[in-house]
Image (cartoon, rainbow, N blue to C red; front, side, top):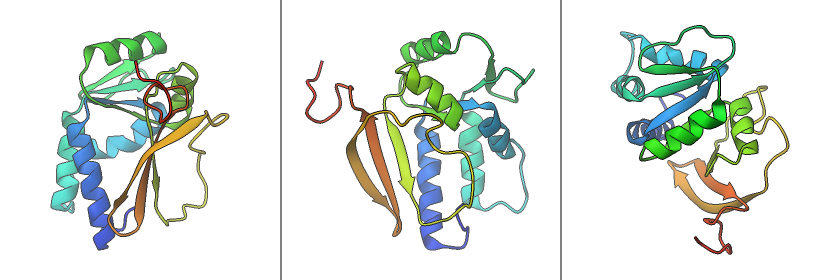
Length: 172
């Protein structure tokens, strides 16, 4: 959770606005999509940053993987069938990064070898409970970069250990 009044929280939130503005789209699991639907409705108490994130999120195409949903909101497509085929098609048709959000979905795509990079944000906030980032066994990963966001957040970027982008691996 980002505390709106903190300077560091503002920097992190701006980072996520920039990320959302630059993505080619997002693929969500049902639970994460239902959480993010918050941004579909305007709230008069929102700050300028919150309004900017909502605008970026609404513009972005979304694909929602679910066996239980019957419909999804604006600018979203329901994926109820061939997940692997859908993701391979998106990767071929779209230029840029496609975000994956939801631990169970990420685990499925990890097992299919369809995640190119994992971004882990270390932020000293204790949530208490939740779904682990890796819903199954952690895949073999290699750290390829890290950077600081604000004063107290680190972003760690990993690639699958077998990726040609991994340090020490031959490039195609």
